[in-house]
Image 1 (cartoon, rainbow, N blue to C red):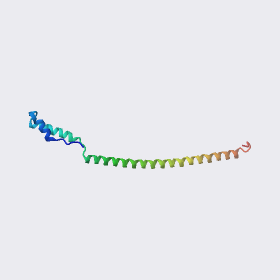
Image 2: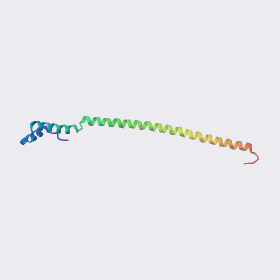
Image 3: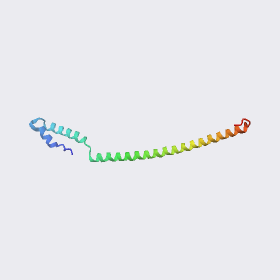
Image 4: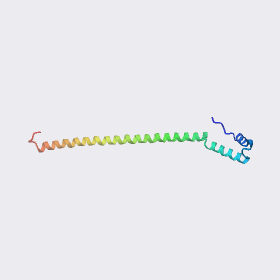
Length: 109
């Protein structure tokens, strides 16, 4: 676990030997503390992110299940259409052969 930024100690170190005035040390410590704490994720941030990821995963799974059902249904419909087309083509072919046999009996096919 990361150590907390000790603002009091930082302020004292800046003031040692009159390197910085009271105001300068205070402002610098506040800026550094703000930069550090502003970039840290809290437990709440992480829990919220985890929740968002879980929701996205569930939504994606639901979308994929729906797409899988749609594709399966479309494939069944296309299979039915192909079978119907094949049966129709065979029927037309048989009909043509019968018509030719009736119209051209002398050829003896």
